[in-house]
Length: 187
Image (cartoon, rainbow, N blue to C red):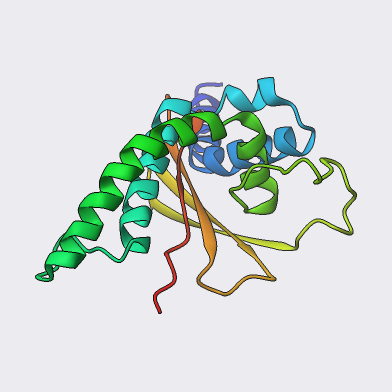
């Protein structure tokens, strides 16, 4: 019996370590299942909405500055003005817009369709699998506490992929903390 005790302890440690390492992938599957089942309560437990909103506000502000033709590091006065205007408008409009848009429905859509836009009134929530876009999911383990999952819709350009960032919250719990928008198109 004494010889068996270290073997059992080693086996338990191996199982626990395997579960710990695989936990972000299990959490992702759990969240995607909740999103497909449209179970907002189960999904909300694994989303850090304040951090998610903050990440999107910053991206929206910089995207608006870019769209207005501005670059804060530009030597061109017009470029600097566009960047300042974009940042100001992005902060004023973006904060309220992001607060209103970042809801369980939108997170569900990001997890299932790799798309970050609200469902329009003419969109039907459960149209069937034939109309859902084909999505390829890949992941990158940044470190032991961060996993980035990329969703690419096959109808989109290769660089148009949505990134979902998950961070460890406790021993084996993970939360969605950030959604990274695709890079803006440069012309």
